[in-house]
Length: 63
Image (cartoon, rainbow, N blue to C red; front, side, top):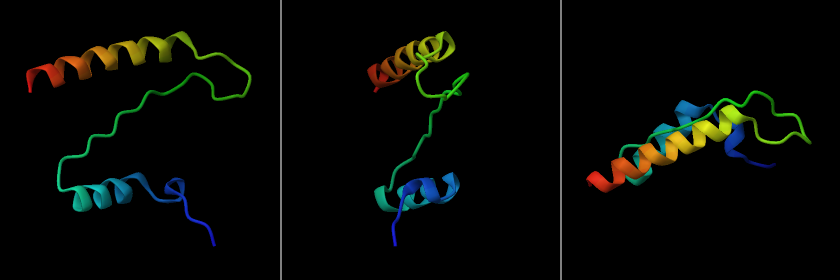
């Protein structure tokens, strides 16, 4: 019998983490244009990563 976090619905996993850690959990994702093997990361994902990185940096600097 194997177990993977990929088998759990996301809300169940987030609720479990919230109860175990005792803090707010934020899930951030970027939708790729394609997930086929052999392709480079698309520009939309690269741009999204850059924007998220900047946003997270600003949030952490405020704390």
